[in-house]
Amino acid sequence: MEPVRRIRSRTVVLPTNDIDTDQIIPARFLTTTSREGLGKHLFNDLRLDADGKPNPQFPLNDPASEGCAVLVGGNNFGCGSSREHAPWALLDYGIRAVISTEIADIFRNNSLKNGLVPVVVDASTHDFLLANPAIEVDIDISRSTLTLPGGKSVKFPIDGFARYCLVEGIDQLGYLQQQMDRIRTFEEQRPWTP
Image (cartoon, rainbow, N blue to C red):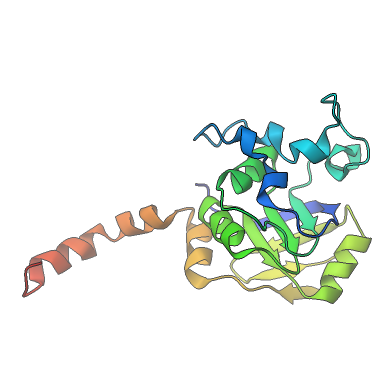
């Protein structure tokens, strides 16, 4: 995993509430354990029409959204079943952060473990972002801040361990591997045997 310290990008806005993980990546595309290639199926049933052609009404199909790495979603983003494929698909498509007033717990945890930054903001900030698509934002993971045009900065919650892993570019296993010397020392010095 690459370190994620700062994300500067324009936003793409998907204002729909209750976007679930099956809408993010439909179950029929969960036949792989590879993260690569899932982006082409991101929001498949919303992004494409019945003939498989891009739905011109869907925000990600707007040419103005090309290159946007920050998705502003409606309330309760990522609800539904647990599937790591959902953050994998977003990342493979090029999305690096999701902003909402509420992000489902399982989706948030899966995102953090895979390098996708979930940013929960207050209703006023969210309303501003929904009303102003394609604005440039700056997400500073170390400081847990989202900076809007004009310099207004808002804090967002992020677990300290998850922040450390994002900034260092490691997952939970990588963190444990960094501790091998300490683990060996503990094993050698403990007075009891398991």
